[in-house]
Length: 216
Image (cartoon, rainbow, N blue to C red; front, side, top):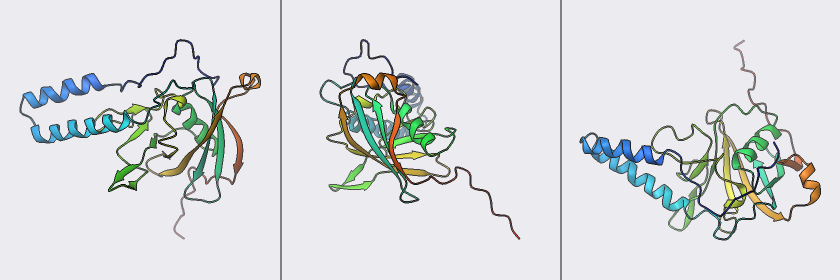
């Protein structure tokens, strides 16, 4: 897919889709005295999520027209890694699709990029932390979250968050470490390229659906 248009793009914190209906539904249930304490707990979790996520976005004007470089390492088979270039105006959904296809898999399951959960000054967990940007349908239980098709590559603060984890297919749980390497000004040749693109790689990914072993 060609890079998305940068016309009229300005710095902003992307909206969380479904927030208005979430508050309306949950507050109505509380007013009706249904599961009050549990629902108040869900609101608190959502407010904690919003507070954390408000700090992950770039504090300066994002470089939407620059080309960003990332490396992903597959965690369950080594060495298997890919380096990508992608334009700042493209989304994390575009990058997720590129990662999945670079492994030779079909993009037929949910995915998410996870930010670290910090406890007592240390990283408690990375994958499956409460703080994430996920594909549509990822937030189908407790509260709405940011979607990868709504967050552009240039909008994250990579000085504060140079490393994330990426998970694809929550049944088989394909996990990757995700590292920001840098960015550069866009060149004319980039306009002719298909972004995101793999610029370096090692190893072959595992089969997406390995054959089941039959009992002898």
